[in-house]
Length: 228
Image 1 (cartoon, rainbow, N blue to C red):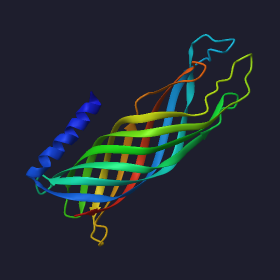
Image 2: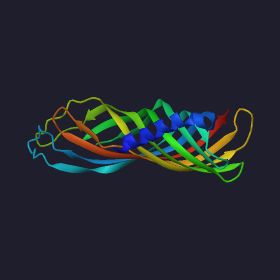
Image 3: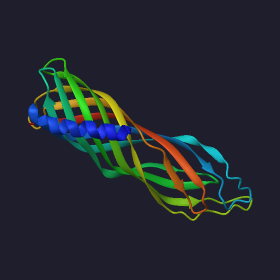
Image 4: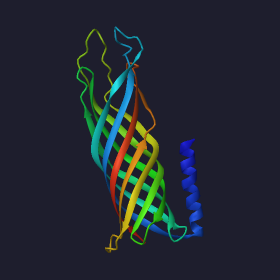
């Protein structure tokens, strides 16, 4: 339901933009990202001790850089209030983390192709400085590969999975400040902080072990853009 409300709000803004003075914004963003995840897993169906009970997985954190490009349509409602609708795209797949499972599972995790649609109400303090909020919805890919099952104990049967692909999606919230400065190819800069609360990820491996994970991503982003 929340996803539908966000999409409806962004779509309505596109339709209404024709009634107001507007402009197009394009640019690049560089984000310092922190992705954290926690979850649970059940015992392998092939284990001699299989009980089917879920056990908690310790929370994991990964920090990485995330470049992206964006295009926006800015609608000026009045002299101090504007509404911006936009799309942000991460065109690269970034290495997020290498997981060491000890006696469990090792794997490499990559995230990318992240698309975020957002609505950004902005209030201008003066001609140089503005503050804004952001609400949107993000969809991206999560690749888990180079999965290596470590030595098993107690007669457990090792799973044979070597890779998995999942979809990351969830709502985005944030706050930011924009500074206008005409430098030719660039005429505004932004600094913002956002949080994406991804939907729960579920995976069933070759031994019918059920794994679930809840993830969230926090970004601190510097934006360089051009309005025309």
